[in-house]
Image (cartoon, rainbow, N blue to C red; front, top):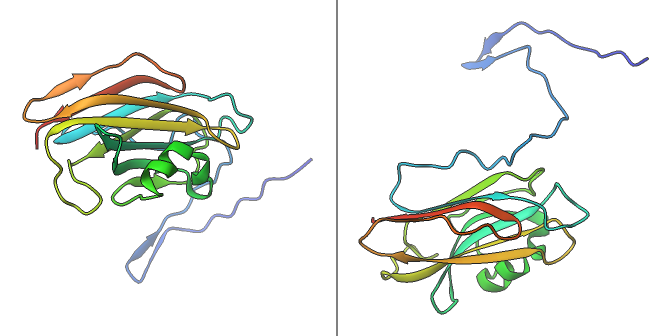
Length: 182
C-alpha cells in the first residue's frame, strides 16, 4: 500500500511575500476548458462556443483557434489560439494567419472540451482600426494528428449592435457572436 506524504509548513512572510501552506496538487483534469469566463461588458466583438470532439484519438485533448477574416477571406487577426506545439494541426488557421498570434489569447493544448471565447477590438495585427463592413469569425478545432473541424460565420462590424446564435456545427455548439460598436 502506498503512503501519501504531506508536509506542513506554517504560513510566513518572507521579504514581503506571503507563503501559504495547506495547498495541494491534483492530477485530475478539469471538467471544462481553461479558457476562462466569457466577458459581457466590452465593446467590439465577443465570440464564444462550446467545443466537442472532432473524432480524433487525442480527445479530450484538443487544439483550437478563433480568428477574424475580411469578406474576401484575408486574415485580419487571431483572437484565441490554444495550441502551442500542435499549432500546425490547425491547418486552416495556420494557412490564413501565417501563425500570427498578435494580441490573441494563447495557451497550451486544451485538456478537455468546454467553452472557448475571443474578443476583438476592431483592429488588425498592426493595431489599425479596420473599416466597417462584413467580416467572418473562423473557428477550427482538432483532436487528431492533422486537420479537424472548421466553421465560419459572417457578422457586420458597424454602428449597430448585433447578436447572432448560429446553428451548431461540428465541434462548435452554442455559438454566440456579438458585435457592439466601438
